[in-house]
Length: 477
Ligand code: ADP
Ligand code: GLC
Image (cartoon, rainbow, N blue to C red):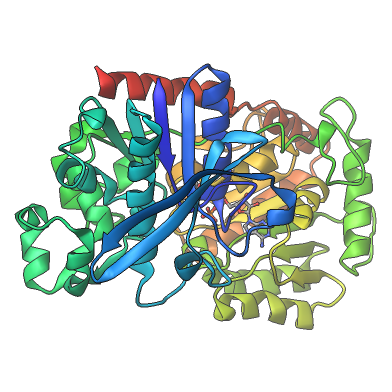
């Protein structure tokens, strides 16, 4: 099949969260299966262009957008011919992937139009266009209206994948002229338009041939008012086309036996390296190492979604009463960053927090910690709990979305299960999860079993790529 991906993030070029991991992996795994795959992302100034050998494939690609004339050039990674970049410094040289600027809608509309126009230029007729999140959600409508005349796209089907329903790309209706769908404005959601608003994600939900999200449980949850973020009724209307496909893990990057980013490699057969990583991690984070003291790890965007507002009510008591340590990595909302900064201040021998983004430290924490804490309020899929499983770092998670689909509750009697899930997103819930995990940690024989169960789990892209292939085939037929 010919498959086009359109996304705002893609590893190793641009990433703020799991979307980058997914779009960095899926196109690559699809090409290995023999498909002709192209993935378009913006060429941000934050990308390390010294590390990428860029080939110019289209020297000039220009199109109007409202009163603006958007001039772009299209590059390709010489070493990864699936990756295409839309070069337009006026839009993408802003020092970060996302901005709150007035033209945020235009930055990503331009990505959509450039990707479709590049297809015309290259004579690439996609069977499927896989659109990721709100940044590509207007594409199905643009394809119908603005590009519908072109027979190149006569058999093209679109799939919208929702990685996070709470980011919707909502803008004032003043952006409508930038869509260039004159004469077809009745296709925009009229009620919203009457309120002076447009919502990009909504139009993807309405017009994509297929809609998917990144776990079966989240696919169900987003059709309820509680998790639907105002979109649940539209998703219910399209319920027969809404499916949940769990993200895969790129085990070429996340395997402790072959991870170049950690000091000591290890496997389920020989965990001695894990203990040495723990000692090295604590050292690096400025904390004392005492054998037998459990270490909790956190790697996360510091966003309200991740549920850390439960931490101030739970962790101080736990740290004061028990021999336990915590290392945390993440940045984002300053109020959430402060939760971890304060813990570090109050418990300087037990807590260390690194505010920032570091892939190396993320790997190091996965390898060195014993327990991984992820109390998300909602979680479309979540990748870190799956990485944790592979690293034998036992997740303590809220039972929601992809966390519910990938972590199995430990049964201490039979020694089954891979982690600890709490049902209610409350302080009691998180406290129960952590204290139950700590108890299991100290139960002779039990922890080793849980670690072995966790490390044996397989959520590989090899398998999930086949699921997408099937979904694409269904759309095309
Ligand atoms: P989300 O996409 O909602 O942030 P996921 O669990 O799907 O959650 O993916 C998060 C990805 O981002 C993981 O690869 C994780 O390791 C990475 N990540 C998050 N915060 C940081 C950070 N501060 N430094 C390095 N990697 C991070
Ligand atoms: C979003 C979600 C996360 C998911 C990721 C990749 O950022 O918050 O749960 O794993 O996208 O699909």
